[in-house]
Image (tube, rainbow, N blue to C red; front, side, top):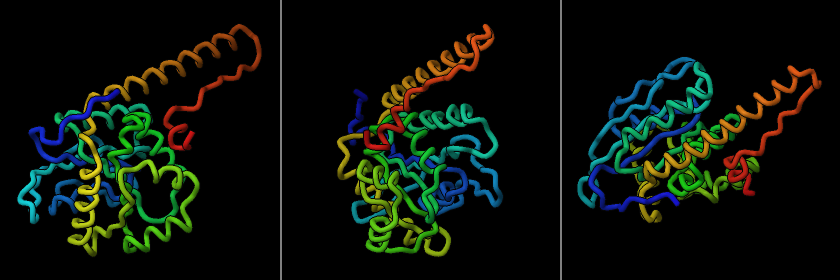
Amino acid sequence: APTLAAMDDDGPRTLVLVGVTGEGKSCTGNTLCGQAAFKISGGLASETSESAHADYLRFNENGVTEMRVVDTIGLHDTALPAAEVMHRFTKFSDLVPTGIDAFLFVVRWGRFRPDHDAAVDAFVANCGAEALAHTVLVFTACTLSATELSDALEAHAPPSLRRLLPQLACPPCAIENLSAEADARETLHAAVDGILAKAVGRYTNAALADARARYDARREEERAAFASAVADWRKGSGPVMIVREESAAAAIVNGE
């Protein structure tokens, strides 16, 4: 089983932003920091081609906390092959040597689309199902209160999202980065505090390495199956079906 680091380890509280390209990850990172630490794209392509980080100090009634927020490449990036996206995505581990306190999965408020489902599958495949217990779903461009958001999800969430929500560390939160940045920052930090209150430790790089090894093994099995099918076709045996087992990520998200 993956090892969890103790909460009193040295190093800052670490937050990792994940999600589909163009959903507001970088803007959410800037809201947390209170400064323009991450580039924001005004077009269709992502500005985040590699993982980046910013360090800041959080001041509240409990004192001062050193924080680190990491912005990752968008899952399903518009300009890169899927394998390259996954390779670059997991490089964020270099920026969080003491582990991760919270993942913030960022989704623009609106329809929960198939590419969001695919991004969740990719996240679980690369980080493991245990990462969900350290994850909060953040809806950007959303002015709903916590109660209104809960009611909206109860009434309209698609089946895939309904299966996902109970596996997350805490209820989703809604923020408006542009017109209410201070309120958004407070909401985000409150969500992180909720994760810290429930978690028994940090998500570690060891957990990420284990999940990545499982992902690579599945990819190798698929490549071998494809090569075998091509070899059979070249022998003139006619059409060949390539049978792939459902990924562990999809099974977990589907509640199986």
